[in-house]
Image (cartoon, rainbow, N blue to C red):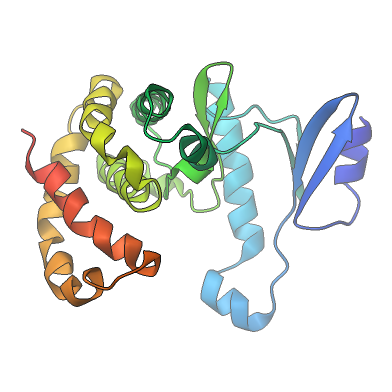
Length: 234
């Protein structure tokens, strides 16, 4: 009740609060001026979509955090610890990192099997709770994308984010894709492959940037790896 009372009060968009030895996060609609509203869209609409997403997903026990409390302009979620990108970085190229990545892939497949699409899945939008990877951050979620096409796009984005931001885990992505396929709906993988075939031109036009030294071009350097990842499997 104390957490919900605080959530109903004015505060920052994202607020950490501790109560009874537990940590919670309060999310509120983002406050944007006209310029950013034109760029990013209506934040109240995005907030309502995310709030509804959690309710729909909790109702079918999807691998997402359980809502603690919510209202028209606030959402309270439990703290889930370090995000998976940080955990993968801490684990390095070890068996622990591999297990985390396979766990994440299985959860994404199970999430898709329930009919949902995340919108922009990334290890930084995942957490490990009671030995299960949960997905969070549904600001990009839209129910109209809950299709095989949306799920295929999710998978490509997830693999790309791993390859770009946790490059030491690339060696485990083959196995991770196999784990995903074992729990995902039939048809998502072939559509992901089609998506990558259509994006071959992106590799060609970004070659000059890929050749640049340094970490700033890491996302461009991940492009050929991901396209090959989806090309080489039946």
